[in-house]
Amino acid sequence: MQTGKTSWKTLVVGIAFASLSASACAVDSMSVEVGTASKLRVVRVAAQWDWDARWFESNGNHIGGHWDLSLAQWRGTRYRNIPDARQDITTIGLTPVFRWQQDNKKGFYVEGGIGIHLFSETYNNDVKSNGVSRRLSTAFQFGDHLGLGYVFNNELDIGLRVQHFSNGGIKKPNDGLNMAVMRVSYRF
Image 1 (cartoon, rainbow, N blue to C red):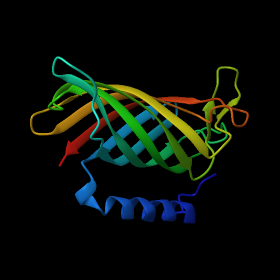
Image 2: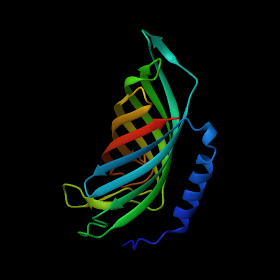
Image 3: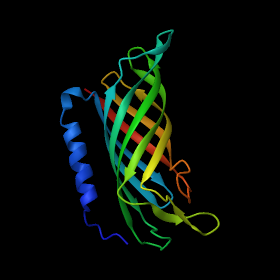
C-alpha cells in the first residue's frame, strides 16, 4: 500500500517534465485535465506543440494536430482490491493528437490520439465483474483517446475525452482501463 511518499521515479519524471516545459517559447498551449474511472481519480497537466502540417483541407476545415506531453497523478482507492486502500501513481506520456478543426482553429473540433505512457508503478485497483482485481501488468502503457471540444475566440479550449490505457498485449494480464476526462487548455 502506498503511503504517499514521493518516490525517486516521481522526482525524476517531474524534473524532466519541468525542464521540457521550461522552454515556454516553443510551447503553443498548456492544459489541465481531470479524469475518472471506477475507484480512480486522475489529475494531469500537459504542454502542447502544434504541427505546421494541414491535411484534407476543405471548406474552411482541415486535419491538424499537436504533440501532447503530459504529467499525471493517479489516485486509486481500492488498491489490490482492498476497500479504502490507496494507490498513487505518477505517469508521463507523449501523444501525437490529430484534430479535425476549422482553419482558424476556433469553434468545434473532434480529435483522437494514440501515445505512450510510463507509470511509476503498475496499476492494481478495483475489481472486474468476476471479482478479480483490475490490473495493468506493465509500467509501459499505450494511451488512446477520442474527444470533442470547443475553442473560444479568447483561445480557451474546453473538451471532453474518452481515454483507454492498455499495454497492447505485451504482458498478461492486459485488463485495460477506460476513463472519462475533462480538459481545459489555453493557447498562447
